[in-house]
Each structure stands twice: as C-alpha cells, then as structure tokens.
Amino acid sequence: MSDLAIIDPNLLAIVKGSFTTEGMPMPFVQEIFLIECKVAGTSYLNLKEIEPNLQIDEILLTRREPENEFDEFAILILTQKGEKLGYVPRDKNEILARLMDAGKLVIAKIVEKKWIGNWLNITMNLYMRDI
Image 1: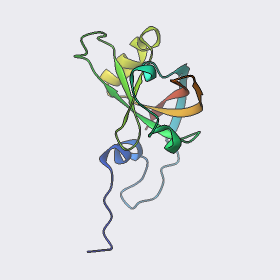
Image 2: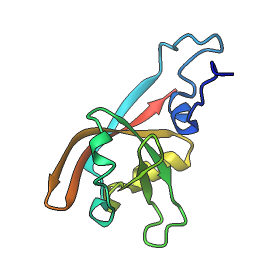
Image 3: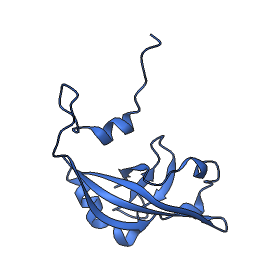
C-alpha cells in the first residue's frame, strides 16, 4: 500500500484530456493565452504563509462562483492545494466566465508576485486549455 499515491483532484482536472488511455501525451493539447491581469482581493486575505510557496509559472486553478452575491461572473483563483488567492478582476471576468460556463477549462499561471506593504500583488496569465 505504500506504493500508492494520492492524486489531488484539482491537479487531475488540469491534465484531464492531456493523455491517451495508455498514458501517452496527446500532441494537440494547447494552452491558448487569453489575458494578463492581477489577482483581485489579495489585500482581504492573510497570504503571508501561502506566498513563500508560490512560484513563477506555477499553475493556479480557477473556479466559477455563479452564485457570488457581489459578481455573477466571479472566478475564484486557487493554489493547487485549494488555497484561496483571490479573484479574476470584475472588469476582466465576463468573457472568461462565459467560456467556463460553456465547459472550457481556464487555468492561470503566476507571472510575478511582490509585496507592496501588506498587499500581495500577483500578476497572472490566464489560458484556455484547448483539448
């Protein structure tokens, strides 16, 4: 039993469809760049423990929150461990939300991170994973 590994379902969702049933990589899986933006709302969270583990080019997960009381197009940004980092900014999320609602997989990658006072400024690129 010690040879078994627990696979994070969020990570599995990222690579879903990227491999054949025999485990071979599929050649035509593409990441289509959509937009670069900041992670919104980081100043409302205590990210001091999470930040040291965030790496440039790290893949971040996205999750739609259609029932969000403040924004019907809200898209939550999470680490691969499921830790909340913030949101896609409201002025940039409608088209991305519609893509996700249509079943498209949208992921983010960290471009830059830096502290400005107590605010963690995270720049990310968002991609649609075309399978």
